[in-house]
Every structure is written in C-alpha cells, then in structure tokens.
Length: 228
Image 1 (tube, rainbow, N blue to C red):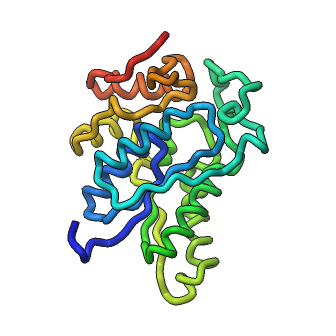
Image 2 (tube, one colour):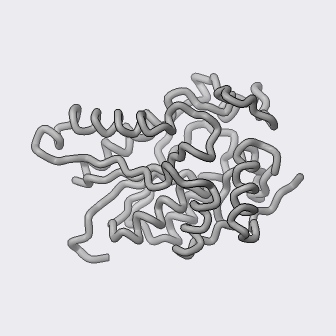
Image 3 (tube, one colour):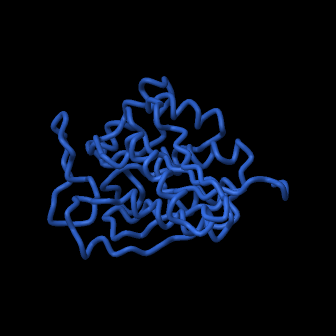
C-alpha cells in the first residue's frame, strides 16, 4: 500500500456484504482499517469470519469492539428467547432488527476514523435485497454523514467525512458478481443468523434466503454449507 493512500475505516461483520465492501475499498486504493462488533449476537462464528476476511484482504488493523446489546434485548439476534423467524411478513420490520445497531456501529467507526484522520467510512448496507431494516436506507446514510460533519472536532477543523455505501443500490446477485471479480472466497463468509460452530448455515432464515437467491441469480455456485 502506497504511503499516500487515503485511509478508510470499514465495518466488517463477517458476512457476504461486508466482505465485498472491504474488497471494494481495497480495490479503490484505500488503506483499510476494519472494525467489527461483539454485541452479544447469537451468531458468534461471524466474528471468526470477520477476522479471517480482514486478514485475507490485508487490512492494516482489525478491531473488535465489545457492546453488551444482550443486556438491552429486543432482537432475535441478541435474545435467545426470541426465535429466529423463517418467514418474514412483507412490509414488516422483522424481529432480527437490532435497535439502533448501525447508528452505534457507525458512531464507533466515526470515532476511530477521527483518530486515524480517515475521511471515509465504508458500510455494506443495501436497500434492495435486505429485510426492511430502517438503518439500511439511503436517508439514514445521508443523515449520519451530515452528523459526522457537524459533531466532530475533525469536522470543525475542516475535515470532510464521507459515509461510503457502495452496495446500496445493488442486488444480491450484482454484489456477488462484483465480489467474485475482486477475488473474494465467499466460503469464508458467514451470513446466517443461526450458523453453527462449524460455520454451517441454516438455509432457512431471512439472510440465508437472500444469499441463496443471490448465488442462483448470479449463476454462480453457492459455496455455503447448509445444515438443513
């Protein structure tokens, strides 16, 4: 990486979308710093996948931030008493929504970006093939970018922050094709909400269904191992 390369903080969950986002940032020439979150999620193996992906794609540093969302509850992803749904009602926000998750994730990423003097933060949100989460919409990204340029010491000194969401308007198939062209090994990623310790996916949760359909529409063999 050239010493003059711009610096970016990339949110990396271990899933397909964030891996593709990291690869895009690398391809654009950014010196990448990856940030992941241990937020009491039931899917613990995604953190292993995040570490592997970050290492394979050569990030400069990978941080895992601990946030106790289990103490708050309110989501099937953090509360084992709430079943992971296998069917989502059209137009409804599913119980896999984690309250204010992307707001908090981006806030941590912004803090690190300010320390690193990085102007760019990448997040793999998508407004087409997603579950209706309100913190994945274009308006949210625009609003957080406005906040970043209003409420930081760096912005007061003239630094301009950019919240980059390169997958925002891509279908899952388009995301997969882009990632394959960038050399991503998607077998290393974990998207499933209830993956087992061997990183096998359930095949029936909302995230698995979007992933399966994406590979099918991209006409690319799905490397995911499913236990159902």
